[in-house]
Length: 175
Image (cartoon, rainbow, N blue to C red; front, side, top):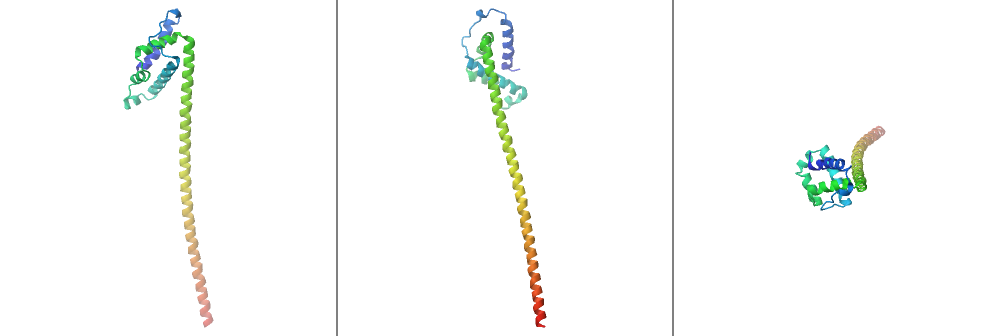
């Protein structure tokens, strides 16, 4: 299990331990992340966790260290993150606001990617229809060309037949 997954479990443990304690005695972290920053951190953590659950190999394939990425992105270390999680777990109203916004972020990103997938599917469908129509048109053109060739052949036969009849008639008249 990666470090971020441990933070989720650790935050639940902190909540359980401190839920019954006096909220007034909590320590404010030396570097307190804003609610907005916590929303972004939690959103990233949830996305990373989901990716890790569905395809854990992807991070290794691209040589990504998840923890290092998170800490660099938010310019924090693991201790700062743990202290902020513990602090906000004791700030019930702020924690509720944070997780409501995280949920909105996740749903927004899901809707965005779903719309991209729908567009990609539509474009793929259009490309298949265009290819199918192109093949149909090509077959129609070949059929018309063949039909035109047959028609020309028929008219050539008819013309020869008329010439032969006219030649026969002219020979009969001469005799």
